[in-house]
Image 1 (cartoon, one colour):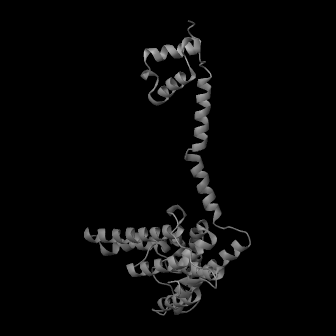
Image 2 (tube, one colour; image 1 turned 180 degrees about the vertical axis):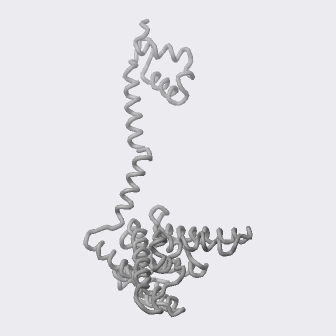
Image 3 (cartoon, helix red, strand yellow; image 1 turned 90 degrees about the horizontal axis):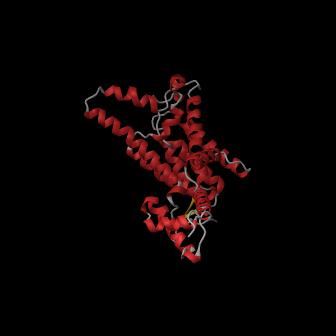
Length: 300
C-alpha cells in the first residue's frame, strides 16, 4: 500500500502544474478572443469560422482539411466548469503518476493520450449509424485525463488517498466515480463518438505504462531535444569558470614577483583584480609601472 507523498515538487519538476497552467492558458486565450470580438461587434459567426473550426476536432468528413486540430482540441474547453472538473481529476491522477514514474514522463503521456483519443474519435465516426456521428466541434482534455487515470490504476491499483491519518479512499473508488461521470457526460446527447475519445485515451494510458515497465521511455525524446537546445544556448557555468581560470593563469604567468623592488604576488593579484573589475584604464600610474616592472619590461 502506497501513501501519498507529502510536499509539492518545485515548478521545474511539477509536470501536473505545467499541464494545468497550459490548459488554463488555452481556455483564457480562446474565450478572451471570443469576448473581444463580441465587444468589437464583429459578426457572431466570424469567431467560429476563424477559431472554433481551427482548434476543435471536427466531424470525420472534415478532418483531413483540419488535421492539425488533433494537436489543439485538448487544450481548449467550452466552459469553465468543464475545465475546472478536468483539472481536478488531472491533479488527482496526474500527481500519483508523476510520483511513480517521474515528471519527465507525465506530459508526453498526457499528450499521447490526447492524440490517441482524437484518432479514436475520428475513426469511430466511420461506423454506420446516427449514434456514432461526431459533434461539429469537440473540445476538452478528457482523453488525456482518462489516460492518466488508467495509468495510475495500472501502476498502483492498491493505492489509497489519505484524507486524514485515519480516513482514506482507495484509488479504484475515485476512478469508478470519475468513469461514471465521464460516461454520463459522453452520453448526455446520446452520442457514441465521444465514447471512442475516452477509449482512445484509456488504451494509450495503459500502453504507455506497459512500455515503461519494459524499459522503454516514449517521452524521453522530447526532453533529449530540449536538453540539447539548452546546452547549446545556455552557458555552461563550470566551463566558463574553467576558461576564466585558464585566462587568469595565463595572465599571471606574464608577471613575476620581484621582492627586491617591493613587488609581491599579492600586489600583482590586486592589480589584476582591478583590471578584471574596472578595466586597464582604471589603473593608477603606479599600478601600471608595477606591472611593467613585474613583466620584465623595465629593469631597475
